[in-house]
Image (cartoon, rainbow, N blue to C red; front, side):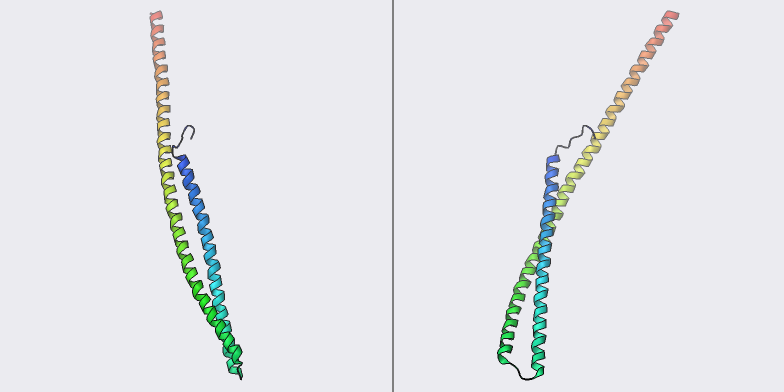
Length: 159
């Protein structure tokens, strides 16, 4: 509306920018979490595949103990990596939760200012409408007074 200025517009712009920035951070955190979850799944699949391969070799006949020993050591290494990856995934999940909370809080802060702006805009519009109505009433009153005087003058000249 013409003439309306929201005194807190710079703050509202800042809140909008902050919310957008936090949304971008949340999206990046979510992507990182998904990458690390995929890596965790890949490690678990590798453990399953290598374990199945080792069991199949054991069922086929004579075992190459050196190979079995290396496979077992590698499986232990993979299990350690899975444990580390699980810790990382949990950490990233907590970060995503924190980032989501920050976005929600920023959205609330922005929404509160937007509501305040809307309330002030409505109040401004009402005040403008009252001013326009008062001006229209003054014009009508002035016209009425002028017509009344003209009619009185006409009556004086005629009479």
